[in-house]
Image 1: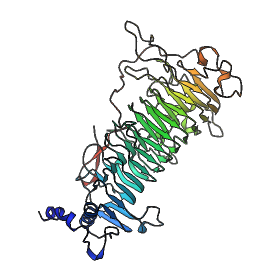
Image 2 (image 1 turned 45 degrees about the horizontal axis):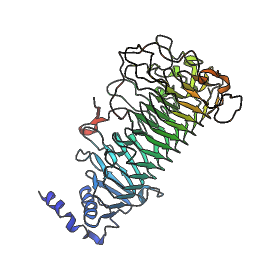
Image 3 (image 1 turned 60 degrees about the horizontal axis):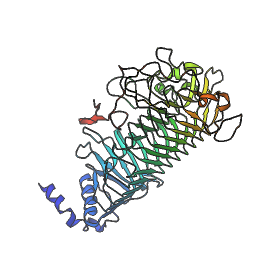
Image 4 (image 1 turned 135 degrees about the vertical axis):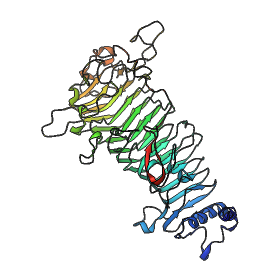
Amino acid sequence: MAAAFLYLLLPLVSWSLAGGQSCTHILPTASAQVNYNTIVGCLRGEQQAGLSAGTFLLPHGIRLPPNTTLFGVPPNASSAELMSRLVLAVPTAITHYLLLVGSHSEVSGVVLDARDNLLGEGCCKCVLCIYGNFSQVSNVEAMGTSTGVGVHFESPTSRGNTVSETSVRACFYGVAFASGLSARQANAFERGVLENVLCDAVSFAGYGEVRLTTIRRSGYACRPPGDGEAPAGAGFFCRGNWDGAIVHANQVVDTCGMALDVDSCSHLDIFNNTFSGPGYDWDGNFTHCWGALAASLLDSQMCSVSRNLMSNGRESNRLGMSHGDQHQVFSELATAPFSDLPNGTDTVLTFALLHRPHAGAKPSINNEISNNSFTSRCAGENATCVGLAYFVGRGTGLEGRRLPGHAWGERGPKQPSRFTGNVEDADVGSVRCGENAYAAAEPVCRIESDWPCNADDYQHPKENFRNNLHCQDYVDVIHDRPVDQNGGGLRQPLPIVMGQGTPRWEM
């Protein structure tokens, strides 16, 4: 009762702090509740809270009121003692966040450390949650939730929020954009660093923009519900998002899985990025990372992939070292796995445009793949594998809708993806199944021809828009493996954390 009465008085006493403090220079105390009351009192009473250097223990998360400012000593200070740190002191399920940012607010210069003390059920626990509109967050570090998200744009109605110059580490997911966000809302994460993220560094369940950000050493512990080996987490992951995303001028290096993993998405604009070092295994400790591509678009439409540098050079990324052809996209049905590739299971592949032969799979159509550099080399003194720059799978460029009264294989009008101006540094430039268009406006492409020709167009027949003629489509569809038609989401459900901080997985 007394605690509730004190909370009601916070707006009245916030400007009368002990020891001559002011709301622009708050000192930490040993009491988590006193720290919380002081900070929230200043935010309510004076619309600002300035944190001095030191560690502010908290009993649970802080919700920023609208039109308020929270600032501290920037995290790039020379030592931890010179930073302003907000730290969850005890396990709590009172809030699902450490800091929840509402509308028209600003946050800068603080370290947010949940210390794995966010408990409770459901999605999504987050260190920094963006809930309102037109807020700015900068110079922040978010860390410490192996069962949640570092930075979560969690409301499907939020718009105009920007998180910049922020680092995220030691979280299950790095940055996530909620399902339902659209391009009209334009929430962005810029000039950040995402590292040591357990699963996907960035998840586009809905629309988001990520620019000028470095992603590294992530994706090694993206564990599925129940038993079994973890899937490999990606730098950028998108599944079932038809609102799109912007991925611009980022650097992704040393991820367990792919740098870019896109499944059944639309309207992504991916340009001027560097994707390298997929299949990173932490000195052989995580072999489930082996067999990775640098990037793939699976069952996706109207995406633009342009002016990117992509490379894959690890011998351990031979596709035979992976978990197998899980989507059955690298061969005809009822044939040897990976048999559409030039060296079968001993192929190292950089980029792929793919379509599943499964019931309900979205068509892979109307994508633009232009002016990219694809490098694929099989490193190793005695390596026998073959580097393939890019692979375009069966059924791509073909409308997935079957015409009434017709059998599988008789589809609607072709809607090819268009390849122009791509260059390759690989043992084999490309394998081109499906029915797409390669420099369609140029009737003759010779060696070293300029745009719109792709570097290896001269090696492919001029007829049929330079597609390979033996692998346009699958002979049948797999009906016993329907594709999930749900909307955008995360790769894995987040684990539920019960008492004593012990995680279990949502089903």
